[in-house]
Structures are given as structure tokens and as C-alpha cells.
Amino acid sequence: MKNRSRWITPVFGVLIGTVMGIVEYHRNGSAPEALTVFAIVVGYSVAVLVLQRRSEVAGLFAGVPVDERWRAINTMALAGTAQVLAVVLVVSFLGVELTGGDPMPYAWTAAVLALTYVAFTLWYRWRS
Image 1: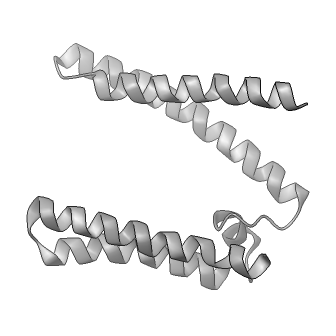
Image 2: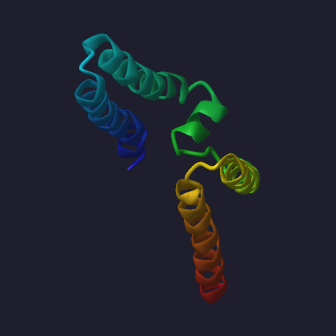
């Protein structure tokens, strides 16, 4: 299982990089831009793969925390990220609303964030 877990990030990195590269190519018709997008995503995945055995942080980024302390660090980092994302979405929504743009992408993203938070809160409450 540990070897399988080690390869999840690079496999998904190649898949996501390929899809993003194809989308970029079809959108702009530029092979260099498509290859750049592919290289960034795959490069991150390869860096995490290479470094995860030497660095606890890289292991965490690969989704393989070393112990309970690193799981707690991951949980706190995700909570902080969600709080910052919520503020950014509200500010972006208001900024676009004030300038006459379409605020719906921000509204939908904020709604998904809020509903996901409520759903997971209820799920973990039910399981505890």
C-alpha cells in the first residue's frame, strides 16, 4: 500500500497535466503553451515524488503524512486555507458586483465551499 500511495501523486499529475495541456492547446492552438502547462503540473508531481522520502513536508504534499503530528498540521493548514478562500471569494464577489461583472462564478464557488463545510461537519458529527 505504501508503494502504491507513493505513486498516486505522479500518476494523477501526469493525467491532470495531459488534460490541462490538451485544453490549453485546443483553446489557444499553441504547442509551447500547452507543453508549459503540462511541464508545470508534471514537474510538481515529480518533485514531490523525488522529495517525499527526504522531506516530511513533501510527503505531506504527496498525501502521505508521516505521523499524527503531520496529519494535524495538514488539518490545520486545510482549515486555514478554507478560511482564506472564503474571504477571497466574498471579496471577489463584491468586487465583481461593484464593477458590473458577472459574480456568479464566485457565488457558485462560495456556495460549494459552504455546502461542503456543512456536509462534512454533519458527516464527522454523525461518525463521532
